[in-house]
Image (tube, rainbow, N blue to C red; front, side, top):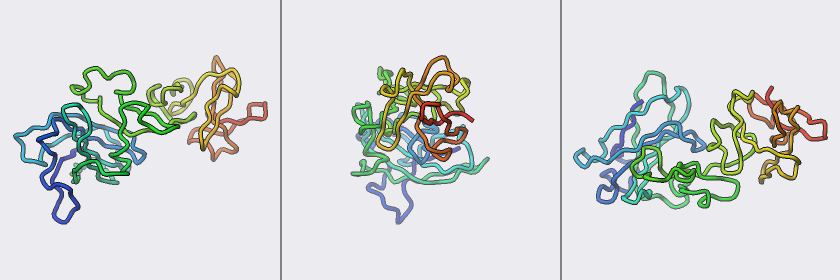
Length: 249
């Protein structure tokens, strides 16, 4: 996988025709994102003033072929803040193929969720979402020297979403990993009653007994009315209390 910072081709809309503003940008982050803004791959690197503007290459590997992705460039100033941003996509990556991405780079535009709603802490995000940046997860020391410690898009938080670690779920939820029998991971929290389970604007959760959840304790699971309300690998099961929750097949 090859991604290149490039000067947009003739006729493309570009606030600036010379790539990153090297007078103010000292580092850049190149990322491949899913359509919901979650990061698939990325790298932060020093901007090399000796290269021709727009021709510094970044190689990103480990990206699954056959899916639609977005490419994003974040230009970071001396303080680590996003000074410029550019996004291109969606694009389909084919197995065994190099992919050259042309991105128009400029100041973060207003009301553009790809660039405007970047966050450093959970306080930067609207209700029901959190900031997945390492900056917000207590790993902020020396971030400007780190490859991964950059601002991120706010991410919705809800019971039942997929996860690999607790960091994927937000500050109030934990992650049941795949080896607990929950395919793709499952964001949840422990509970003693329904009153302790989180509620969102478009979803709700209830306290599932330990024997139904097949765990050592009761946990909050996402409410459902039928299997279609649940992620792949999950079905809508009754608790025996009049409640139904999304649980593994």
